[in-house]
Length: 170
Image 1 (cartoon, rainbow, N blue to C red):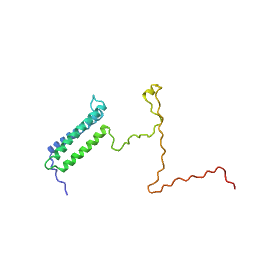
Image 2 (cartoon, helix red, strand yellow):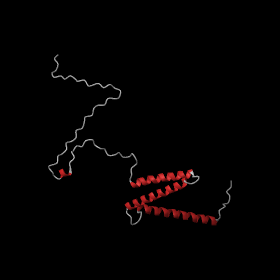
Image 3 (tube, one colour):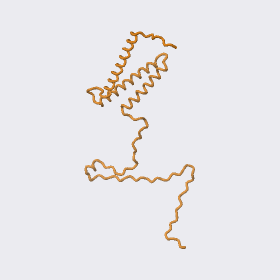
Image 4 (tube, helix red, strand yellow):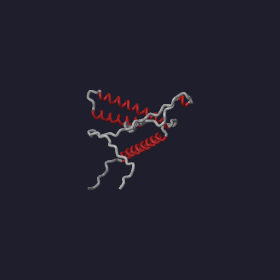
C-alpha cells in the first residue's frame, strides 16, 4: 500500500511542537520544585517543624474528606463509587496520620511484663535518706507451683520411692 501524504500542515506541526516542549519544561520545573521541597521543606523550618506541619496538613485533609463523605452520604441518591473513593482516601490518610504521629499498629507491641516477684525489697524515701526507724519489708514468699493433671485423668498421689542405705549383698 503506498504511503499517502500527511494531513498535518507545517503550522499545525509547529503549534504542537511548541505545546510539547512547553509541557516538558513544566514537568521538569515541577520535578525541580518537588525535589527542592523534599530536601529543605522551607528555608527557615527545621525538619521537626516540617514533620509537625505535615501532620497538621494530613489531619486537615482527613477532616475535609470526612465532610465530603458525609455530604455524599446525605444526598438523596448517594453515588456508591464516590462513597468508595472517599472511604479509600480516608483510609490512606488515616494510615499516613498514624505513621506521622508515631502510633504503632494495633497488636504490634506487647504490654510490659509485670514480674510476680521482685528480687529487691522496696525501700521508702525515708530509708533512702537514712532513717533507722523504718523496717524493711521481707521479700514475699512465692508459692510453689503444683503440677497440673489433665482434665478427666484420675489424680493418683505420688508413691514414695524406697531409699537404699546399704548396697545389697550378692
